[in-house]
Image 1: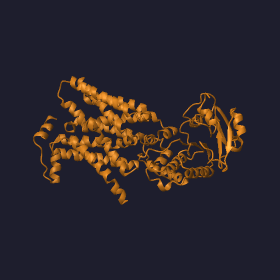
Image 2: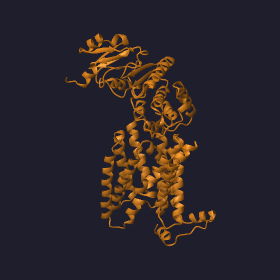
Image 3: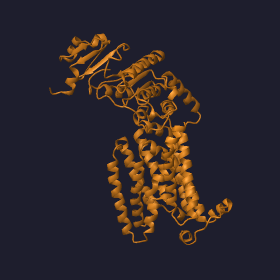
Image 4: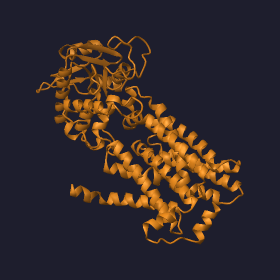
Length: 291
Length: 229
């Protein structure tokens, strides 16, 4: 991990503009291979769950989850545990609470905002208690995909597989209750249990995505691709497909550009996401006129 | 089903849907105690409109009425669900705009989508909570005729809550009048009269008819909104 950081800051490789050479260079180091592996898994998960986050209007809840997770991760570091453990524990707890409130949460932005501000403050306290390097906090806040070990990739793969399997299992009733909770409930869908389960799945997905883009930038991978996708299609499977494709594209391109540049990966991933969203929104009047 | 706000019309629908248990007495629908998810009952809740940002096609929404309560993704059942949704969309005349996002449809179009959604499981009873309230007069008339046609064609019982009985008068068989904790049922001509309503509610209720034959019930709304008067 230290080697990786050293390599990136001291000797930035320059692209040869020969795609084969550049690709070979990209995958020359293990840390880049791991970054691509973890990034791909995270993009698959974030892109798929993002559709439901957008459809349910719970993007702020997703954002809040990551901040709640930050406090957990920082606390775990103080306690001498792996930050992922604290991250997962806090996002699961927070997710269950938000999910249990369910529909009553609509319009509760203020409550969520107050809680997330407090947890962020808690995180700052934990970081100051931990007298180690600030890099740990920095990695949590902004992601540290270039420092991912082979074991981390494996953990991400298992968590990703569980998340996707869970999403596939609840797909239809989740879609139904996301569109209309009252009608779904009348048809016998357990809407409150589903709401809690969805937030739990989201908690796992957020925990994974934090590795790549960090707590503060989670929107870029979970919300932005799906938000772009629904501007193109209102056919759910297509929207999920486009969202996943975009999340993959942002991650892969972001990693590749960052490799040949002195700037952090998170910056490129979030910038690509933002630029694409902007382009789509600005081109909408044009596309409408052409139709 | 008529009556002032808060008289229990929506509560009765919730009871029939099985979402609420009666605190006293017994309720049977088609000879069974109501339970959630009963396929013999179709339901249209009261709502102004869907969120304009809701990005799902009307067709997908109707398909969810067919099998949205089942777990997993649609694998073998895809053609089956699409076929059922198509038939239902055609029945309410909503086929043309079924590929457009639900949130972008007009109020009348959304109401037809809700009807298609309720009909897709081939129910025997249709419960509608104020389906006309958010429609303009022209759409109200079209909706009432559509409900009547569908009910005849499919041999459906329709139990409908209305705020204003006038658009419905030519089509309804029975009126269930709820107010002040009392219920009375009969044909509109029997129930909606000054004498009958005053007698049932033991308060001065007046039924007025204007030159177009529209009826207005005066007296019950005031009582419900000023319980201490």
